[in-house]
Image (cartoon, rainbow over all chains, first blue to last red; front, side):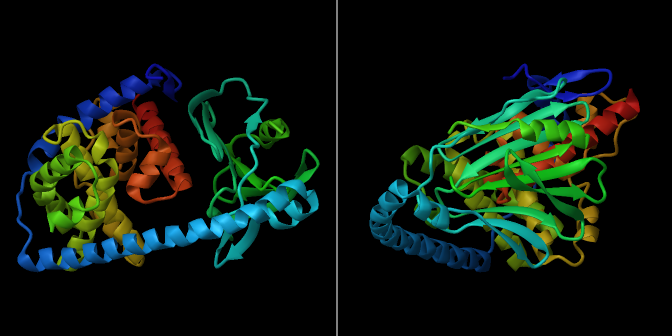
Length: 235
Length: 171
């Protein structure tokens, strides 16, 4: 991982390790860090009291959440029965499991607002254009993401399925041009940045599985389209 | 005041480490907050939010006395200040510009990768540091700074772009 190339320039590529060493040289041992922030100050009694108040509120909030968690456990137990019903009934599942696209104030939000458990769908990219290298990725039970870097810039692919309250934010309206396309037989939203050339976000909701995936990229549309046509799922 | 934070931690080792961080860097945190905010209430808020962010990562801090940790405390505090300015809106850009050089000097004439990193705007330099020097994933960075994963990725992408421009200029 440390030898992975994370930054490319026309004349040189830099690895993860080189970036870390350069940052250390630039910042950690700089006179600014050693000297500028050497001032010591004791917080005043008034400040202490004020922060104490804020922290008491925080603790109360934590207690509130603890009570909330107990209530949620009961709620989830009740949902288990309902979830089982959904698992065996495809029609019911389609009605209940879905992400919602909302226009809220000046933003587009994709919201998941149910506690219903997720499926085990995992998405992958089956086509990566030449010249792109994976620089970061992560995957857990409910989501996965991959960041690739190439000469034109990074592209990010991420999927989530809805195991918890979740929210995905997109495009401030008026800064993106929006249209819809069809990907693998289902509609997907495309947001093209009005100011940055060849900058797109593509979002697709899989209502049946309660999943959403999106791809952020700066590249030619034709290349991007090949990538999104190659989005595959494990189910 | 410290007791209240400690009540949020479980292990003795973490409590000892957090106490050390608190005693060692409270001056640093207030010092940075003072550069951004005149009001004591705002400074308090920044320090409080910084300490809550530190609660989440205290287990991963090896040596509270190291320069590495000192810088991490500065990075988190500074980003909490910037977030608070952003939340306030309005004079955001002016304020951010005004404080853009809290930790940086003018870029040197000859530029290596380290020099280019030193010449980056603070928010971009912090992203490079958190990702590559401290080794946090973009998800962890998002949690520490209290921003969305998407925003963290965008900021890192922007930092890459700026770094490339600086390096290409010199090459």
